[in-house]
Amino acid sequence: MLRGGLVVNPETRHESVADVLVHDGKVKAVAENLTPGHDTTVLDVTGLIVGPGFIDVHSHVNSVAGQRLQAMDGVTTALELESGLMPIERAYADAAQAGRPLHYGFSASWAAARGAVLADFEPDADLVGLLALLGNRAWQGPSTPAQVRSWLGLLERELDAGALGIGILLGYAPRNDPAEFLAVAQLAATAGVPTFTHVRELVEALEVLAGPKLAKAMAFLGQAAGRQVRTNNHVERLNRRLRFAEKVRYRWRKRKWVVRWVVLLLDVAWQQAAATTGAGKGAKQLGERSPPQANARGKKKVA
Image 1 (cartoon, helix red, strand yellow):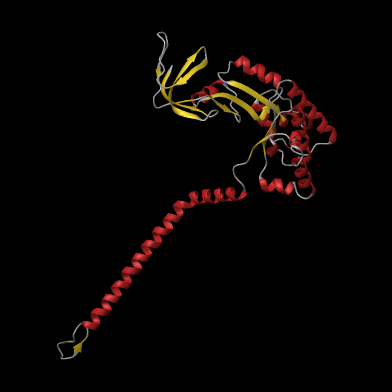
Image 2 (image 1 turned 180 degrees about the vertical axis):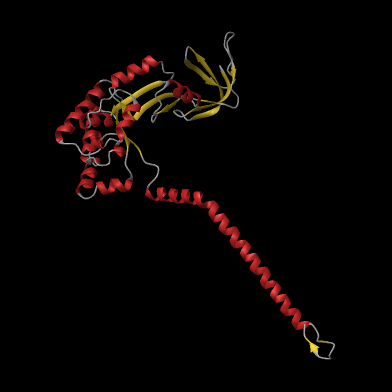
């Protein structure tokens, strides 16, 4: 029994201090002041939050050590959906053999499928190998109709093998044809699975989707809901203006010590100028107020 914690359940919107009774890995009761059995282990969790495990749908942690750290944050399911892995059967087999402490799942990798067709990439169900592909320009450009059919076929086989959806690293292939994305979305809609997309920057997307291409995309989005596909887009955090501001800030930090020295020197110069001006004014006023004095020859001198 978990005694005295703040019980939070997003599904039922329950949030209150209560006791939670767990038996054989299942929650049996949630209420205040539950009476434990004689053989019940009671844990005092006062001041802690008790809730269902978090499901991380945007995880790139594919190691036991990394998932143990996630578990300490309350994550119980880590899903590699944005990137995906390929071949999917090997990804599941490797995860099971590693003995992962969390529930896991993978999407079909659009990048790996395109890389296999356009860049002779050999997917090995490893994220490190997939990251090495991203800088290869051979897979970043548009595909011929035959190539589109080839990598769409690979994605379809991955879905049949148990992929949870299609992970699309669109932002890393900026020269591909937007029509290819629509083809992937149509495949996902037919299979009844979601897509998980890392999109390019909005400015670049609008440039690519100019004119008739934008109209075509909007027409697709305007189709009946039953023919559409759910999407979970991961948008770039920084647009061009923010990146420019970041560069300015970084350069300012690098030169800040120079600016400080210049300000200090200007301050010293200003103080010296103020002191000199003040001394000159004082001397002038003294000369105006001092009375004439006679010298030894009887002539008057002015101080």
